[in-house]
Image (cartoon, rainbow, N blue to C red; front, side, top):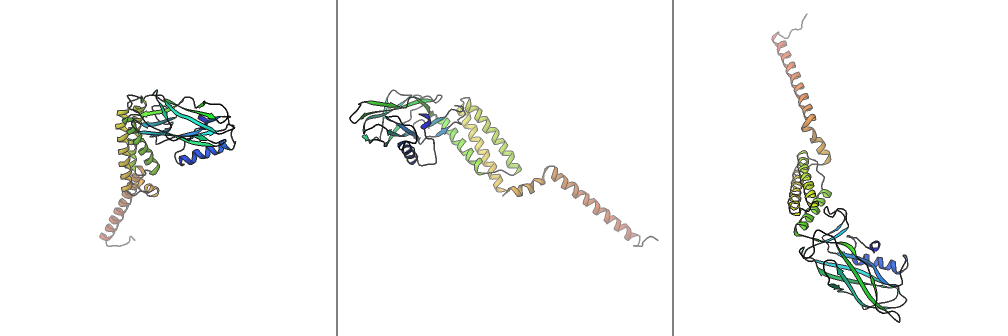
Length: 290
């Protein structure tokens, strides 16, 4: 159920899930007469979003190979009676094995919900390719008190899981640092802007390499882009520039500085002319012409 998926980073996850489940419980959205996944949230992901250059706009949830991933889901009971849970299993596209929920209630009362949690280790890229998006599926089997037994509800295949290689993870670290620096600093100084231009060149080169699958080359250029960017920030900070002082200093080079130089030379020549005139007047004895 893509439409019910929560994708929040800043809100406490459990509170967000409970809020969605509570809304579902009071009937503000249509509810099937069954138990179903009201919402789910991945925790601890390296990256969540649509801006990974290699996956080109696809919404992904990426974990580093070897990391521990965690999935939290609410299961809502909209049947006419209490249900007992037989199992809640997570199927991952790179494996035929089922992951049983680490945290799961034995029963869920009528018109209420419960929280289920799965934890698992993300495999190496040799077992789960870092070049494709992997699917997953949640299946809940339950018995309705006084009714049907072994009923199941499943999310169906959701395609969003990605396993990052070590190089991809390093690229993501550099991208996050780059973005944070851009948000935190504004470069004003002329020399610092020159360095920033160089940094952008390296960053764009890294983006192209990453998009083509050259993650090792991208890692190097992303890192160099960040180093150049941070050197530009340090250079700018050492000048203690603000927007106002930068505009003042802008005239110390370029056409405005040249204008100041020409004006200064003109004043100097005028001063020399006055001095020569005064000297000639003194030589002639300071007499005014008749």
